[in-house]
Length: 95
Figure 1 (cartoon, rainbow, N blue to C red):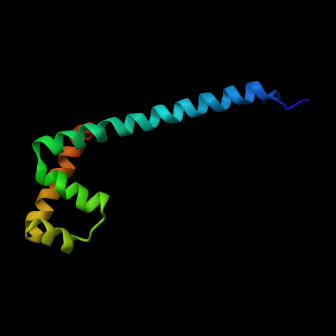
Figure 2: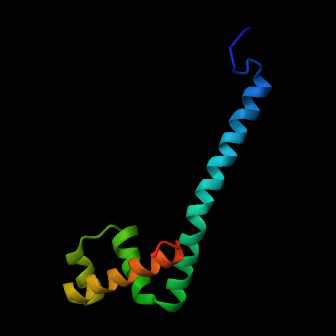
Figure 3: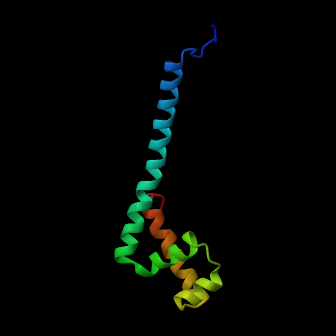
């Protein structure tokens, strides 16, 4: 069967899909590894930032609840978030 430039046999199609999946997995690992390292660092060295990360980005609580849970003012909470974002940028080699 003529498919133009594509492959028509199942083995070639399977290998092509496998190569695509391996590339996608590699791209995801590039993102996940720095996140894991950041979370490990935060849990060991910056427990307040780790707690903020969990409350805001894992549990997705609104700021008002986060402030109450962490016993912080809105301003202090936002400052801690700014430090968390800056720390995350360093782990991703962004800033």
